[in-house]
Length: 102
Image 1 (cartoon, rainbow, N blue to C red):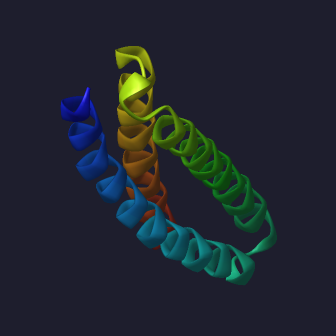
Image 2 (cartoon, helix red, strand yellow):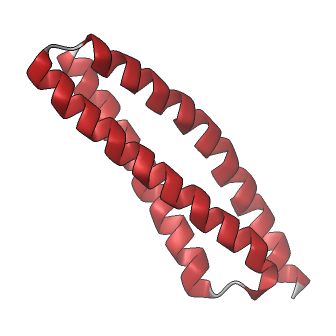
């Protein structure tokens, strides 16, 4: 059982580090959205809201994973990994789109 706990720790550390960085990135994107014109601003604000929702969901799942420790099912672990990958890609895509707008 300790083997699974050891596997979770590096994953949790990586996710926590990324969540911190992504929180800062989302805040920056939100600032950029506030500077945009009305139509673009609305679209940008929607995208920022979706990123925040995904980030909050990942934080919640990570908390669940940490509480479950070695008892966490492979499905839970895979769900966290998938959401982590999805959020990372979403942030990258939104940053690229914002760079074209602003």
